[in-house]
Amino acid sequence: METTLVCFCLFISAGHVVGVDMEWRAGFGTVSTQRISLIQLAVKERVFLLDLCAPGLSHHSLTVNFIRTLLTNTSVLKLGYGMSGDLRSLVATWPELKEEPLEFKGVLDLLHVHQQLQRCWRGRAGPRPVEVNEGPAEKGLSLLVQQVLGKPLDKTEQLSNWERRPLRTGQVRYAAIDAYCLVDVYQTLSADPKAFGLPDDLHSVKPSSSAKSDSDKKTKEKRKQTARRARQSALGCAGDQVECVRGIGEQHGASITPQELRVVCDNMLQGLGRYLRCVGVDVLMLENTDDHKVAAQIARKEGRIILTSGQPFQSLRSQVAEGRCLTLDCSEKARDQALRVLKHFNVHLTPSDIFSRCQACNNDEYLKLPREDMTRMMNRRGLIQDTVPKQDGWENQCGAQVEYNRSRPPDGPAFTPHCRWAPRSALDAHSFRVGGGAEVQLETVPPGLLPRIPEYFICTRCGKVFWEGTHFDRALAQFHDILNLSDGDTAARKH
DNA sequence: TCCAGGCCAGTGTTCTTGGT
DNA sequence: ACCAAGAACACTGGCCTGGA
Image (cartoon, rainbow, N blue to C red; front, side, top):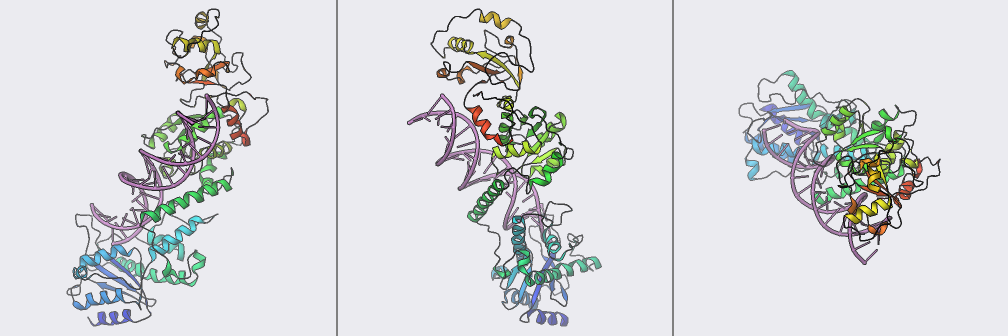
């Protein structure tokens, strides 16, 4: 007890910086809060381990008073890491602290400093220090120690039985280092806080806001920053994308056609998927209800590349071959994401690729119909009242086999999408159903369009109707940066 | 002017992390 | 296993834009 008294006096001396840590038996049972087994107190010169399992010590009035005095004394700086948990255990150990609640004074929680440090490093461009989820991940206090002092902590004793006596040498060493490293880290940080992106006064670092409003502001700001960065980097592969984009892009030295690029889009990237289909890329998209792992299953089964974003990237990447999973910045606009993907894979895009694939179902086969046939069908469906100039035996024509041409469309307007063309027999003249069984979506064609648009394209899988319009020009403009405008393709098509 | 589609921001829920 | 904090995700409504 005499040694204990010396210890108490030493730590309550003014001007000390004390590393404080506590250990209790990891409770995997029903007990929500565990009683403390060991309190570690470290100063620059030495470390004391206060063994609360020692007979009589835990409930000695001196011990309780010492703890109360130490933690409320403003002239002694206490360092901890994640001290809210420690406070709960203190109350569980000494219920009297609940009746007369402890008010921490002169306490610096290095967890908050660590969070500030992480935020700062995340914001930096260029190479970053090791972070959670990168490499052989250190975390928590061990990560902080590695980032500040250069070496991680050995946490193998962290979950050991702290109630068993005597403590093993490894436990004693771990307990001592756990408290001492707090002092070491603090001194390194306070010697040159700017080098770590921290304010001169470490005590001014506030905990990450728990208030929803502040959190939202941060999220909002982060989004804005990300969008800004995305704009600044334009189409260059910069920042976080580099790591994941690299693996695949370097495989494609020569350019490829959009049709050769086959991807599966995670459900967060449906906008991107639509853009890619617009230029002819073979895109499968996950539904909102689909699990992310469905993307990996499809990718393996069909040899597709996964496009994803956010956290799912980590798990999806490990489920497919290296370089077969690409992550994108979800805050980036869908168009910019698409441009990034096309540039990354060195896709050779021509105007004929625009709208060469149905954006609704990903089919790349169309049936071309002249205005007269479209008018007749709409008339029969009662969608228009106009009479149609009589043409020779359209129904008969439908039955006739037209040569199936995979590269050249039937004679028609200047616009020639790079797709497959179905024969006229693919359309049932009576049911208005196309080869895939879907009914032609006549109701989506505005009647006012018929006098102006001479030809219509019908998706043979879903029956969606497309026609020439201003969409094509817009798409050309959107992809102008990477479009190879070698031919004089100026026709337009529109849904 | 109306309508459809996309984008953005707000909100609530779920998941992950890190402490013992 | 439990707790707290933060991140990620899902959903929704308002706003904006462009075509009809």
